[in-house]
Length: 408
Image 1: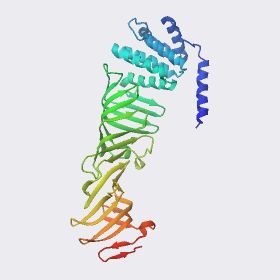
Image 2 (image 1 turned 30 degrees about the horizontal axis):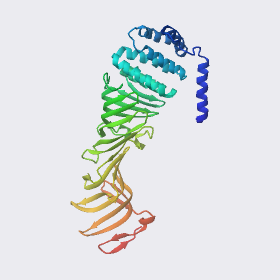
Image 3 (image 1 turned 120 degrees about the horizontal axis):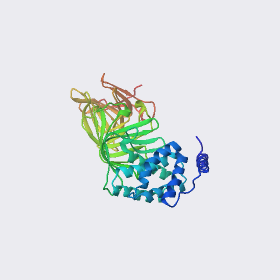
Image 4 (image 1 turned 180 degrees about the horizontal axis):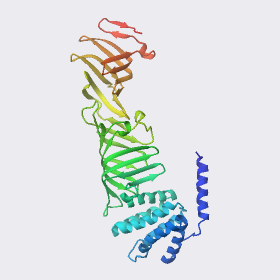
């Protein structure tokens, strides 16, 4: 990887090289002179064949006496030249935007977008203007793109796009925005991806923000199938510049362990671990910390909080109240485990640090404050280990016989 200073120097060198090969340094003041200069400049950036095809479409629009945005288009091109934008794609997108707004939007909506653009280019850096035009071009093209996907945002390895659903320009809104209904939102970053179904809300290409009212995330990334583990999302705002999102109002539905929907906090991040077996996202943490789940495993009741990290379920406590599993024999509590957190897997539960209490009659017990535990529901075998360190070295306490028991 090039150091930042060398990378900046290389970028500046490439821009200067492109500019030195460029013969057009300004765009004419009259409409006719501007068109001649712009046509020549555009051909230098895009090549003659591509330029001829694009300009053939643009010329009738440019010459239309009713096109009120001609001066705005000229101002955009001059600002791109002034800011030394040399990326051919960006120049192509400027033409694409002129054609798209002219052909598919009402006069007020066109005027609104060009006014917003005129205001934005005054205060944008070169890179910010390139990003804005790329984002706006994706919105203007919508689902008519080559891959039939609505590009919401793209920068480097990060891309957010819509598959399916509806995206409609709000012709009469306070600013340029699109109404999204029932869409599939996909996020892609390097070799990682995520998907949110049934998304409805508002998309603002000026800020690259999606303000959603609903959505659904199935935990495919963690290896679960459709409907096995999923979140119904409430209101959330996604900054499309970012690789993830947080939803404070999300409801978890699971076919495993939890028999009721749980309200909590959902979080998703791209670019972490991409294999289902070691995924650390998505994440969910239930707000309730005193859930009571009878028969969490057969004959085992649970009380505490609940969370998921990737493929792993966690039974968790809160300050002052640990999570607890109560093991029943003939409907009577026979043993209790208490810990800050238990790991839950299909083959059972475990905790590195847990207290253990074995009931001996109605009021007596065998107890240890710090042990490692494992439980296998298939065999109903509970294993208790005493680590060779710290408090774990203390013996078990037998309240019935009033003795301590030191086991190896």
